[in-house]
Amino acid sequence: MHRAVLATFALVLLGGCTPGGTAATGGGGGSSSLVTTISISLTQYAPTSTQYGTSGGYAPAVTTVPVGSHIRFVNNDSFAHTATAIPGATRFPSSSPFTISATTQHGTTLSGGFSAGALQPGQTSQLILVDKKGTYLFGCFYHYGAPMRAAIVAQ
Image 1 (tube, rainbow, N blue to C red):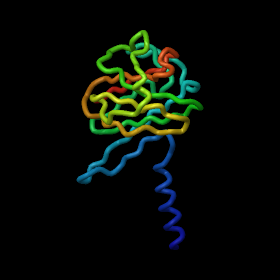
Image 2: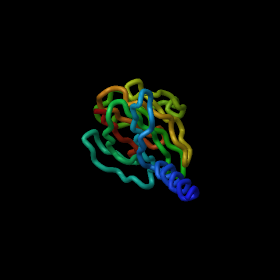
Image 3: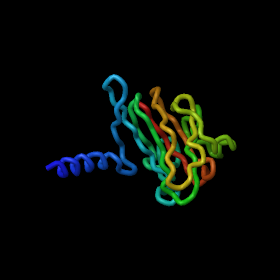
């Protein structure tokens, strides 16, 4: 009986560790915060049209999330990528807006700007707080012209 209880408990715990999924995590005061994972792979996610221009390399191409939740990026490709904010943009710029600073991880809020830094294969970014409503465009320093870019819509 004791083993059966432990086995069931282990399955419940492992069920929340599904790669690429979302999970509710406990927050302060009994509230919970949703974490949405955006997958990065230039080889898996072909270019597609969005209202912001052509997107590719991230899935989903447009991610809609609630304010108060978090975003994280995971590199599911076999080479390095970044996920770097394009501040103030309403459409994807025609040429790369990034400098070498995009390869260094910085920022923990959508509205404050962010970069996941140079994420190596299998690596996961810092958590980024969805702190204000709006549309936030981002892309990859290395492969922006591929076109490796996407959008987050915070509601």
